[in-house]
Image (cartoon, rainbow, N blue to C red):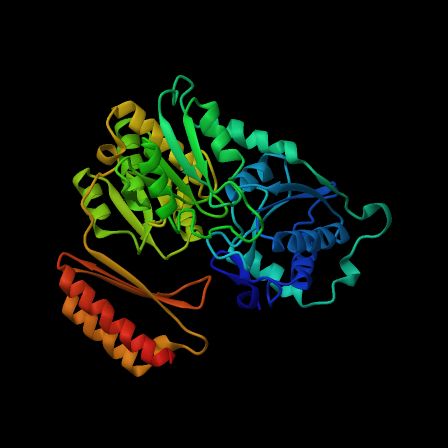
Length: 448
């Protein structure tokens, strides 16, 4: 049952289509309220959202579910995912909820759940919640004075602003720096420019006019061309691109070149290692991170631990083995000294701190290694399991044989969309391209 609702990053889908319906959202609120009902205190949940129009529908449905289960609800309004995780702990809530489909287009939406420690729920707890969604929960509902209450607490946005600023040394200032920021018309549109301005930067902001349907549309970390143009136009020292729920970040240097999550992790790892702040002798990344990052870290006598794709698996490995830096090539970076989940703004601030300390341009400071040629292509499909087709399996096997030990080949279904992702990397760019094209062609034939 859990697989019917929860994917690699909570529940996600097209708004008003199963499972992302008001009915399911209400039942998830009821079920989560029941699962986290522990002790005899007044239970509470904090709910944040991004700027999608469907957020109103999902939010109100979840309020109905949680209050019916006897849980008091604190509505944060548009708020970054990491802020919801932080406030779940700060407000001593039993549960945290972020209503967002992250980098997906506006017609999608999603539900991410956090435990009282601010971490995303384990597979076991998600399965427990999912198992209740299709049951008759009427016997578990509260009555009378035990029914929950709901209120808006918009002022708590300033708790997160102060938290983000405190992740930098007190003496560090961004005075004299021109920072362009693209908030993707999403959850970070209020907090991120404010933090940068309060730290002294000359802030040029775009993607800060959400209208319910323009989140991630031609803006943000998944569409950085607008930020690249703005950096060049205003001659900014750095560009910062967040995604729809502000848990990812990409950087644009002063030349208009993109700096991805692998380079950002290299910058932070090297800086923290020099300061004696890097724990466990390395960082955690996924199987999608570039081989060049691994080689760079090896040269610094640091290790790269790889996990399955998904920030939850990165965080899980970090917690189990004592790492404090991890993330994904997409810019989803987890710094566990500060946060329990990816935080685009806090990660950007750490990069700004290194740039400030080293005194060089971003193009120099943030390019720590030469990436190995890496090709990633997506194949969309409507139904079935194209990966299991004989022609696809043969193309994959042939690709692995041709690549040998000179690179890596990763083929995987997306956890959030009906896509097959095909990635290959190696020192021979022509070979890598040919291998990916052959596999993509086979997948398209199978999908058709």
